[in-house]
Image (cartoon, rainbow, N blue to C red):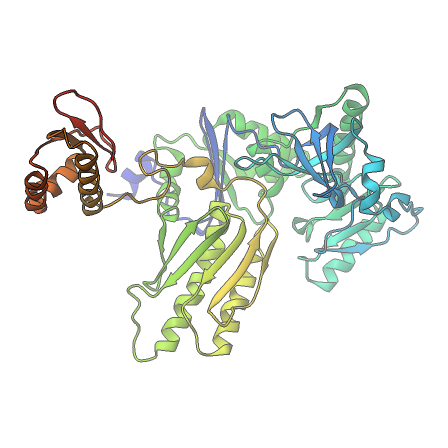
Length: 526
């Protein structure tokens, strides 16, 4: 196929640099971040699934559980939100932020900082109103988790209305850059009693961008206060932006070379949002009007399909296997086709390093969280173990979710935790198989044959007056009975002087069977 034909059909050329690809359809929106053509970030939002993480509510305390050291707050959902006493304490800076004093501003220490968790029930008695922010959406049977430590993220800043401390993200490592940002931070006109954090994307940005961002955040907070003062609880005072707006806020940085979206109205809205901060960035947003679906055109769909398999192959020929359970995520590393040469240790190290890279990528792509166990191939050298550990730490730095990883244990296991704010993508996209109920397995035909024969023995012993049975089973089970177990069935007929008739029903579950009295039609159970 010539390049001209490819262009006419809508095939995108192999791209370098960082590209955001946005697919906007009637029922869902998807955002993919490609780095040199490789899928590195993937987000999905459906109209029926409302993302409330980050939203701010004025709620009402419904009940207090002293044993759990928590209270349950009605924020307008079917299930009350969970507020731990410690999350009801005044805001404190995250460990990933270095505090900075703002020169020239009066320091307003919040007297509530002397409050301990045991005082919380007195501050928020049952029936009282409280302003909270959702930190974790409802997952499975659990309701949302909330905090009183309100924070409003902007493009370059995070505004903390109830904390007078300010800081800079520790992910910005350059001492020279940190000093420059400290000067900008001290000059920002932050209202008394409030604080701001300079986000990682603020690195290298000019002072005017921070001033503009702060103005937008303060206006946003003014609108929230207006809703809170005028409307009774429960009420949503601030709704976390949709996927398009969050993409502009969190992804559309100077590192992004181009943005392609197949929805003209979304392109226009992104341009307006970006224009508030940087008019130059608007030129990077382009409307895609090709005949092929945008994810197919940019090679995203195939990468998504490959990435979400249980088994994910590595470049070296090894592979990892990912299993999500209710308690934890287990990731197993195997050498696969990578048998290597004479240096076995080098082969194992290479496989484990590639596995660490892919694990970090898969955690972002699948949005999996909680406790994660990586079962690496055993390495004898402590130096090699440390190399893999450092590789994982390095790859996790780019993850927007909070992560914590421990060194490889003597058993070859690496324990990790990843912030779990909402359901994983597999949890949102897939549902349990109605056939196997999520087990991923059904009983073998041999097992069903054994169970069926056992049941027929019990029935014929329990009802000695019955001599003719009609048995209905799944076709695969009947095939096994006819091909391999015919003699055993004949023995049953001889032993009980009975007659067995079998019928296949393709609508029957593999593990289902019925035993019926041929004369009366009554179903019999052992």
